[in-house]
Length: 118
Image (cartoon, rainbow, N blue to C red):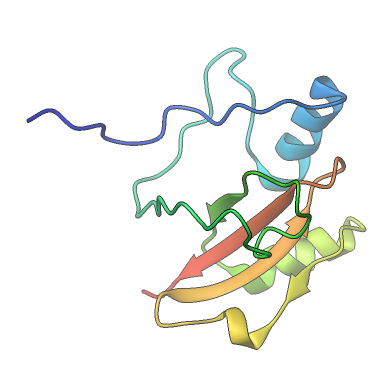
């Protein structure tokens, strides 16, 4: 049986797509497909639908949240904070699968950062 082998893209609406694209590239290293798409390293990807009434994403109208894997959550947190980006952490979020932090892009979309346990 054929199966998909990864996520080929994440597409969403934005008030200012160009500015948001630049923000993701500057602060997270995720770049647009010009001249080639961002290439991620291999690793686990969680695919998890949540209940319609979850408050996990923040705003009630928020329909999605992206989670990016990072190698060193502490270093990433320091880097983002130095750039003036608020980073939310909570020891209760850490689990047997790793450590987590949360930021929001300039349009308020939640972004979860995940350092998997080795």
